[in-house]
Length: 351
Image 1: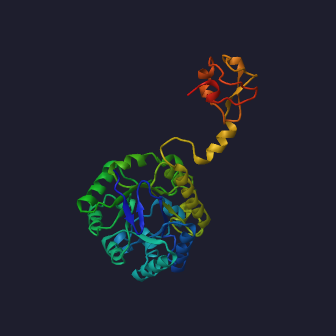
Image 2: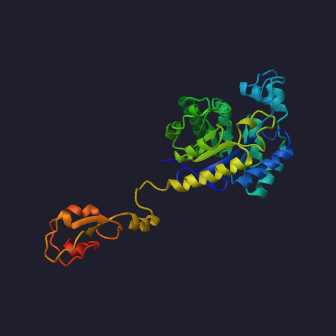
Image 3: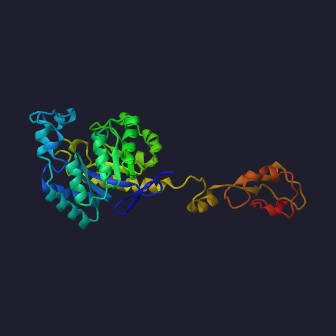
């Protein structure tokens, strides 16, 4: 039995609408006005939450820490990872400003903390849930620290083995926090389709928690497929303009694409329906037109034993089903049946 979690006003888990997180991340480029525009874009797209990142470069990386290869490709190698991140920090006052804007827009503010003090800030701001990034999944002391706030924790699992995911979830639960969700993730920017391995979401269900997908592929097809496979949460990077400078813009959706993703998710959800195979209510009138019935191929006199030559199978489907063909053959006609008449049970004495 999967334990659902509640984030803000929304329940997350099987049978609930997919929770869509629009990942603004650091795509504000340190520009607060751009951060506000990202909130507006996420709200207009219909996302449930917009997520930023909360960190201090001084606490996150060493001064000479190298950039990842994809960061060098997107931002160049002329500065260190520390220098890049220092430009992308958001102050506590900016956090409050962005949260207020989200409240006005009716979209949930989320952020990913990368250290204990950042988690403290978010907790003091009464954030609805903590998003744990893939890079912290083996940082068990940090997970334990965040877990003790008692708020839902959405854990990304990029780069992780199942054993590492198990250790992370177990650490959170042992700290007394049972409100977890686990996101399949591939930490490569952008992720090639052949590297995604969406079926591993099924393996993550062993933790009896909501399961989702934090996506770094290009386009919207892969997250839509994840929803079709039962993802309870979708997280997707977005930007105002993919050509902007910065580490994550290249692997992000633009606003119209984000809106298409959210609309597509809602269509996929509506299409999933239930496990039972049965005709839909709007199929009945179609069935009456395109299915066939048993029809008298000639005039059949009352009392005549019906033979195969006397029966045709034609539209419409409002008469006796062809599935009863073998039962009709050999029966005696109870009434005269003119040629072209749709045969009914009463005409041939069937119960």
